[in-house]
Amino acid sequence: MIKQIKSSEVKKLLEENPKTVILDVRTNEELSSVGKINAEDLGSKTYHVVVSPDLGNWQSPDPNFVENVKKQIDKNTPILISCAAGGRSLIAANLLEQEGYTAMNLSDGFSGNGEDPGWKNAGLPSIIDY
Image (tube, rainbow, N blue to C red):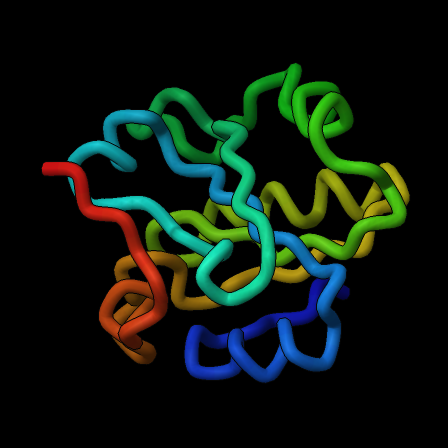
């Protein structure tokens, strides 16, 4: 079962697990319109690999997603995965866990999920380009 992490728990997670990296699976359009995670300001590293390029069909992952992650992140590196609100990142976490990764889901994503505020609204480091 995938461990669920709220944005309010991210700083503690990264302090206790300094090798953990952040994987943002949102589309390029989302990154440019709402902002990007800046985990480097928390002593981590941010990666970006799109899990579902078609937001109209977001539950269908890119068949190359896992291979694209393997090109950037070693299997021994724990990954906290984020999307907008926690749905696509959970799909990504399950795919990566099946491949032997330690994957966690940012349950409220970058923008929040109605219960929790999300990375951006929790005041975690973000890059806003728009």
